[in-house]
Length: 250
Image (tube, rainbow, N blue to C red):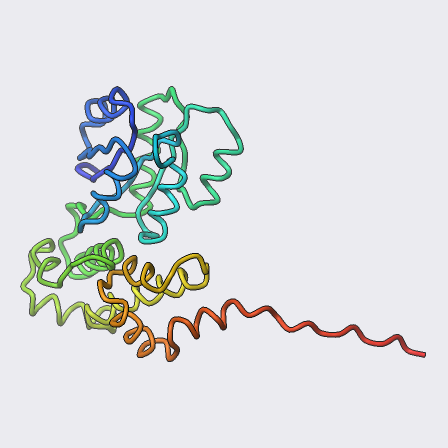
């Protein structure tokens, strides 16, 4: 496996340079802080794995991890820490990190970790993707990573070297859904999760799942889910009814 894209987020230039030079079999992209990383991830991308340093200014690696997981559940994420702290590792794994690295690290050991994680998740740059089923899986992963961004079937057709019309037909045959239906399903599923958490306004959720207009989001959500976003949130957050204890038998 070679050529996979790895985003390394670390405020220390030396660490970024180590990844760029020592991991040259991969396509390494670097960011110096969480804002720069989210700018990169906010555009359509085919990043296969993200490495996040825990200690960064303005936004910690764990905070950035939680932001990434709200919009992308599929990309592999590795937390990197210079602290031999069990608590940090546990919190990272609870926040859905796939693994962790402790500094100073052994390059060969990290390469083995990357190879394992990338093999588990598959790669959008896999040269073996030369048949119909592989290319549809490729397309599905690209949609899953970019469902909340401007991504068209025409964009994907260029990536898999298939005509738009042919890809449209084959995608429907293999998934049972059109491209737009598949993308919408991911948007609504993500919106439901965010609504269940209860920490965001409807406008924020609309933006996070890819809608610039909250009204469009609310209309589409009701059409798919059968409830307005507010109704869905209220149902999810209702406290279970208390069942009175049985009276003691006399």
